[in-house]
Amino acid sequence: MTMISRSGTMSAHPLLPQALQDDYRARGLREDTTLAEVVKHWAETTPERVAVHVASGTPITYADLWAKARRLAGHLVDRGVAPGEFVLAVQDNSWQGIVLAVAASIAGVAVAPLSSRVSPDLVLTIADRVHARVVIVQSRLLAQEAWTGPAQQLRDRVGADSFIIQGGDGGGGGEDPTLEALSDTGAGIDQRAWDPGRPCLVLSTGGTTGVPKSVMHNEQTLIYSARHFAKATGYSADDVHVAFGPYGHASGSLFEVYMPLLYGASVIPTRWKVQAVAELIQEFGGTFCITVGTHLFDLVRLPAGAEAQLASMRLMTSHAGDDSLYRETEERYGIPVLRVYGLSECMGHAISRIDDPEAIRHTKDGVPFDGIDFRIVDGDGNVLPAGQVGEYECRGPSSFLGYLGQPEVTAAALTRDGYYKTGDLLVYSAADGNIRWSGRMKEIIRRGGIQIDPIEMATTLTEMPGAEEVAVVSAPDQRLGELAVVVMVSSQRPTIEEVRSYLSERGQPKETLPDRVLFMDALPRTEFGKHHRNALKAWVAQQG
Image 1 (spheres, rainbow, N blue to C red):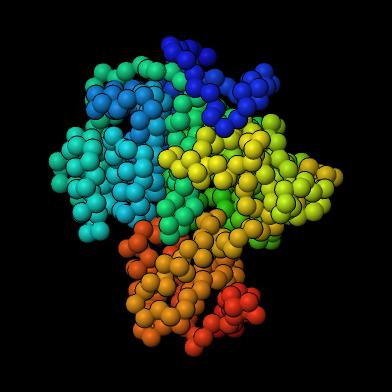
Image 2 (cartoon, one colour):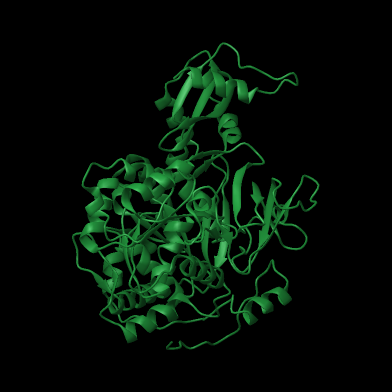
């Protein structure tokens, strides 16, 4: 691989013992390289290979990608973004997001990506936390009334020249610089301040109604995760990766950027609309995608003839769906589906083996990657034998660098020897090496792969005018797995639209808003005076 100038020292991982980090490097589990080096290599060796397929547009080759990223990196440096400082990006999945990831690696800066579905208030919160020096916003958002004030606040914070829009005018008034123009103009720069150990990506997670946690990663953790995910799936330069994972989540900001670029593959960034995705697969010869159960549910319900549209697909991965969805997808399309278990704090993390029998692949959540240390413990921290359910703790080459600006939260999430306390209940099978998710230590609603904290949501809604008692519980749903249902004692009996609006105004992301609101004269309670959640779930189920 063509090398880029490597001046300066490399940052060490702040949460793992140095001896363990040295062991990872000796075993080939830690690569001292950057995304910029990877893309430069492909641009020089296979410049005409397609890096990004653009729907209704000109494909972007690896030479094009490298040139655009170098120019955008130059503009970031011109705007005074120093190594290690942050660019905040609110985007859809797009070629622009891929260019930004490479440009950030060239410039040595970090990216805080957020989905275009998040609330403007959350964007302001994250902008303050990361001390954003540049802000990039999807242009269509600026035409929305809710964005008028926040957009101006962001301009005031970073400077008008550092508030960049993506996608043309779209409500920006034509006064703001566009990401497209910046990536097409200027001389461009080569990589500066090489340091794959420096934080480069922050994913905001959890805190569905409160302050989210900002999970820090560097290029070493990201490349390890992408490399081992690729090895488990037989990924290669021949793959055409259909990328619809949410931007700002691990799938959309790691596996659908780093993994295809590491292997010189092609990627098709898009949003999830099942028929449109099927058509893109047929048009570009898609071979691979990362899904959740909701996506599989939609795929198996496509009309007759979809088999031909998906004929080029060789493999899918999935999680957070009913066991039957994996079987139904394989039976209809003949496409193997590998189940995965993932964590923002320890990327990757486990994946099924393609040669395992269906009875294992369809019911268990995978084998942890090489280098991942894990244990399953009881409530006192004692390690449990295989076959018993307990809290899953782990550490490895993909362990996060901590929560940005939240040292107390970071410390509380780790054991003294650096294991991350996931809060997930898992069971390990010694016979086949697989783990299986069995629930959460605290109540969590899992809807379409998104985790919703019902306690936080209920706490916020107790402040709603007229609310006397509030609980939020799950209800089973065939497509999404679970729905979030608000059960309320209220003198005003708000509509579901009013409940959703109230939560949105307080910063809750759109994808975590509740699905229904129901009313009772009094909520059932246990003998200890707490809301009787099982009784509430049973009552909700009876309401249809």
